[in-house]
Length: 282
Length: 162
Image 1: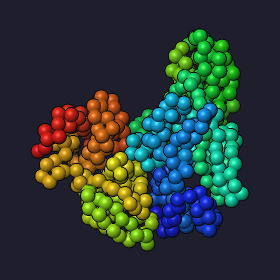
Image 2: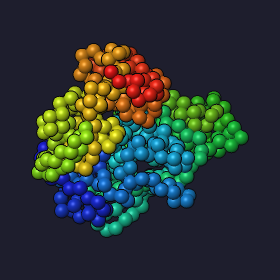
Image 3: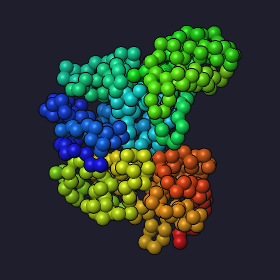
Image 4: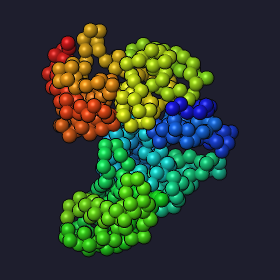
């Protein structure tokens, strides 16, 4: 189908983008890669009056080294993120999760920041962002603020980014722990039925610390904190399997066309064990 | 209406477009590049795949205004005169098509894959074509075609010509 009529504004700075959002009012929408928005527009599930294209704002493009962390411009494409040497070296989990998003053509257009701001509970990036303790820089009419990952994802398709705000970039503390993103889906380019993002600090064959993010087990990506606590001291596959039995604790999985909630809970336990074993090498 | 300037298959085009116009519709309706087809219209099938600044994209999922200032390569821009691109030759030699509807997108996705990975394994080919569906389910020969294209291209620039 063909989207409804809208105005289109291409901006080259954050200030221009904020001004365009303000003048467009509540029906204005940000677009960059458009890989989530355009399918919605074609189905006429959204009818914006103005699209503000932020894909050409220099500050929102690329990856930079900030010493203890790396900062990724929100409009950097998935392909740009997963193939970036800084990401591969210091935030491998993000590269691993990004590489599973949709398909190569979508990854050439779609942006990692866009996926985070879109906050689809079945999207792969939010769980990785949680596990990596990502922080988010949001620009709005009142200036800029930084939001921690735990405060960023608020609800189904809802983040801390307000309607008159823009996600500018996100920063990840450098992490050299073992990592893995595993997801279960049944067909090519399908959304995750359940996904697990794991980073694990292993010393001398023993897990010292782990951070686990879950995809599609609640209205937002969530941390599997009970598993994280249970993994401390794990040194064998049996230890990991036992810890992973807590993967569905406190989650709010839904039943839909693809899976019932209890099946999702089962998958979370199985895939958490697999992801942690792959990340830890145990 | 928005003014756009886009280079398509080596030719520069200027035009006025509605912002809501999808790139695939602009290619087909405004400049007659009908080699690029509309398949599913839901971003799944990849039949409309073109190269945008050298990388594969689904042209049903890009606005024409977003292509302003860019270079687009369609299936019609691959051949050099009467000399086919090696990927086109390989699809013919390996019978990498049945009904042919997915072929323009398959070929463009394969060109993109081989530009990044000139010697892909079978699984890398399958993953590289993950975004392209063949509803005849003729994947086996498509994968063989891409592997053969890789051989042709590594053997030299002229060997793949028709």
